[in-house]
Image (cartoon, each protein chain N blue to C red):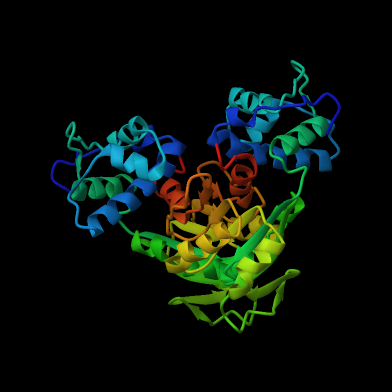
Length: 216
Length: 216
C-alpha cells in the first residue's frame, strides 16, 4: 500500500458506473507509466477515454488521491490507489464452470491474471474436456466440484455453461460456500440473499452499437 | 411498429446507462409474456432486476410508452417499443474478425441472432479455420475481407483477434466502409472521427465482483 493511503477507503460510495470506469483509468495510467511518464492529469485521462474531466476527477477522488492543480496525479501512487480501491492488490480465487469456447477464451484472458484474478480449477461434464489443461488450468469432472470447493474455497464462480444448467451449477457452488457469481449465460437466476451475481450480457454492447450514431 | 408509436423517438436522449438497461427490461418483458401475462408494472420489472421503480419508469418513458397508474404497461406494446427504440426491429449486419474461441462463442450466442444481429461472414488468417462453417457462418481468409466488405457492406465489425492486430484489422474494415466496431480485445484503439468503437472489457465485471460486498 502506498504511503499516505488512508487506512480506510469507503468502497460503498462507488456507483456501478464509477466501478466500471476505474479499470479504464488504470489501463491509461499503466500505459502512460510504460511510456515513461511519472505524472498524469485528469484532463489527459479524460481525453484518452472520451469522458468529462470532472467525471474522471470525481471517480479518482474515491481512491483518496489528491491531484495537484495544473500538474496532475503522481502516476505510481494513482495506479497503486486504484488497485487498492479495486482490491486488485490482493489475490482473488475463482473457479470456471463450463470449459467450452467461452470458458477457454476467459482462461486465456491475460488482463484478468495480471490483476490477481486466479482461476484455480475448471469444471465440465464432457469427458473429452475432463483432464485437459487449458492455459495452465486443469479441467475436472463437475461431479467433483462440491468436494473440491469445500477443500479449496473460491471467492468467485464463473458460469460459462449452457444456460439451462446455469442455476443448477450455481446452486452447487453456492452450497459449497461460493457467494460471488460471474454469469456469462443469458439466464438470469437468483440465489438466496447474501449473494452477488454479476451477469455479462452481449445485448448491452449491441444496444449501444445499434442505437448510437457514429457521426454524433 | 405498434399503433401509437410516435414517428420519432429521440434516441440521443438515452444515457449509456439507460441503453444498457433497456435490454434487461426487454428480457423481463419477454419472459413475462412467455408466462402468459399481458400487462406488467414498472415496479415488477424493477423488483426482478433489483432496480428502483423510478429508474425503470424513466428509462421506459424514453420509448414513448405511457403506463397506466396502478396498472402498468401493455406488455406487447412495451416489447415492441423497446425493440423499436433499440432499432432491434430491423436487421443489423456484422462481420466477425478472428474466429478463435471467443469469436466462435459469439457466433453461438443465440440472443444476438434473436434480435436481428446477423453475422454475415467470419474472417481469420489461420488456414485451419478458413473454410470452416461455424454456427452457419463461413470463415474466410482475412486477405479477402476488404473486397468482400466492399461487395457486402456491413454495419458492425466484431474484433476478436489477438490484441496486437486489432488496430490493423479494424483499419482494413474502416477503409472498406465499416463505421461501428465491437472490440473484444484489451487494446483500445482509435480511428478517424465519425466512428463508434464499443470496447468490451472483462475487467469491468471483475471490478464489480471484487469491490462489492455480497451481504450488503
